[in-house]
Image (cartoon, rainbow, N blue to C red; front, side, top):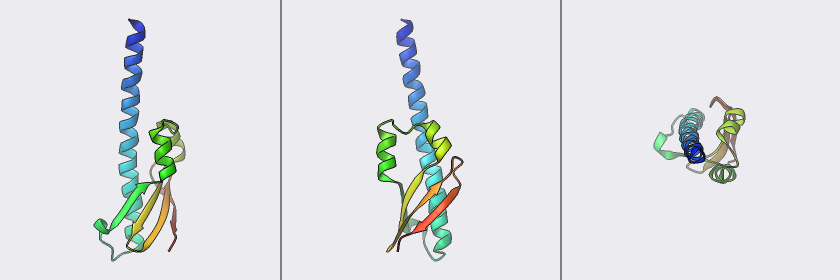
Length: 103
């Protein structure tokens, strides 16, 4: 019986971490989107798309990148605005630390 309680507690902790990861993706993604808007002042926020980098997303989904990793290393996002694309990186606090424009 104790093993079942531990397993259930572990599952709840993982679900809580998943929720925290998703919250960070949303909040820090908005920070990246805001940075794009600053670089392109005539942009409309609805014209800017931002998503977690594909490799990072796969790593998060597979459980290889944890909440602890994200708190330590931050997240990387790909962004697009009209014909312009690039990426931005955030630190473990959600601050944009690198902004790169490809075109």
